Length: 277
Image 1 (cartoon, rainbow, N blue to C red):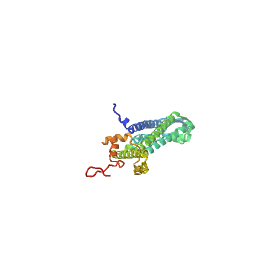
Image 2: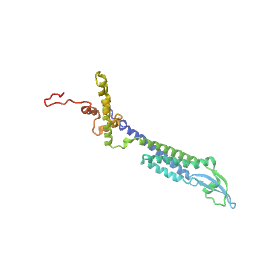
Image 3: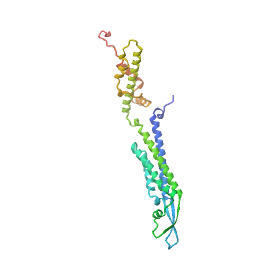
Image 4: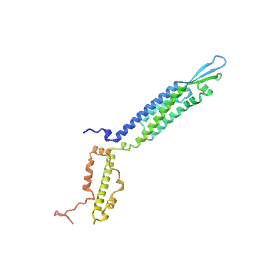
């Protein structure tokens, strides 16, 4: 007989491990996106050739931090999101996922404009801080710097999607945050409700099998005595293991309930030991 691992006996453990792997993947993507944004802010996005008429023309380099000033702040935001992804749950994690995806989209806008439309001379002059006496003669763009930003933007968006899925998966694991006492009470309630349904069904079958039996003593009477609030699904494997941990044997519940169940009346005896009619 092989010993059961926690992942085999408790589906919640396997679910938590799966969500943890997604968090790790999201953290790796966030780190790659932050690295891409930071490195692209140091790269030369375009080179401006300008002259003032008094001296030979000279080149002015426009780096990513000058062309897109929010690349470095976005990289810092993504690094902070890595820590928040492992400490925030619920709607807070959803908000972080949306902000991460929005950061990726925001960083991609100037990169797309550089690739598709080139560099505007006025914007390039302002970004390079070229004095007003210079006249722009030629602008040469570096598309690879924009490609690095786009790669980081894709990583950020994918990380946001993973974090959003982690938040949705963690919301469904409500039993993870229940105390052992609460799980024990829920287990007892579901086992009692399951026993009441089985008893009512057995009484209904017995009443239908007797030709002269009273129909009023059938399942309608038993089902009326059952409380709707106690109806629920049968106890799952998680609840059975919780019951064993708390000292309850779930296999003996039906017998113990059947001994004191109202559907099994006992004949009272008088002092002489004989049964009363």
